[in-house]
Image (tube, rainbow, N blue to C red; front, side, top):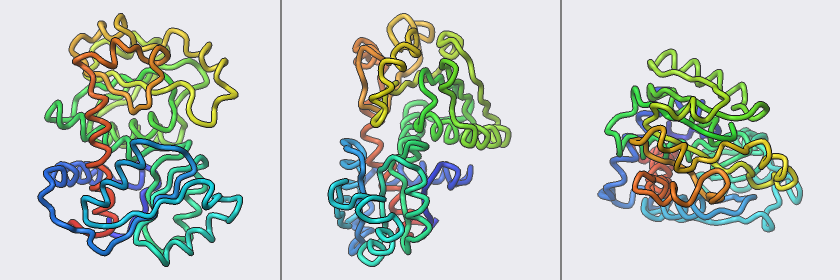
Length: 305
């Protein structure tokens, strides 16, 4: 994986997804030493962040490297400077570029022109680093991934797209419940179906949340209104009425663990009662962003086999 870009989950083969998780588990023990000494990471962010900025910065620090942060007003991707120019300049300063932006095409253009690995830390289309942290969390709590049933309730957004591919790669049964018009994009869904066929997993779309949650090992949800969708807020709240992960829905799978990538809009897609329950893994997920990011950076930089 040395020198490789991570733009979408499809950039990792089925075997490589499992390998990233294994490396993350190993690095989580923090007995690795300064693997990235002398290495530099550029954080290029168009969107505000808590977990992504904190985890990538901390990950590079724990590996012994250094991070330079560029906010939206400093660079102005595609406005002040085209992405291709930013890529070619930063490639001469740093060893890896980590990008959190809106349009997926921006990250793809950066990768085309960059002389160093580019990591997608979130676009409107995919969130691969979140999905890697999620499956790491599942592996830790269940001791396995193959055969587990993951019920995703809500918007088939960037998180759902990457999670479907990651889950399918590891032999999980992924079912998503959402209203018409909010399905996972066709590209990631077809890729996930292909991987499920090879791994023994499965994918299914349903309309009713109860049909997804019954028998689930994990119940996962995400916000209905993401950054940049404020103009759609009222329509989305109407469309997702009935899709809240509340006590009644969670009771349909009483042993299931609860997951949310955060930040959570408590009282909308999930209730305070559920996210604060003993079944919740949300803060373990948040912590594992750090360890999954360490694995991604270490592999991209060729610091571990």
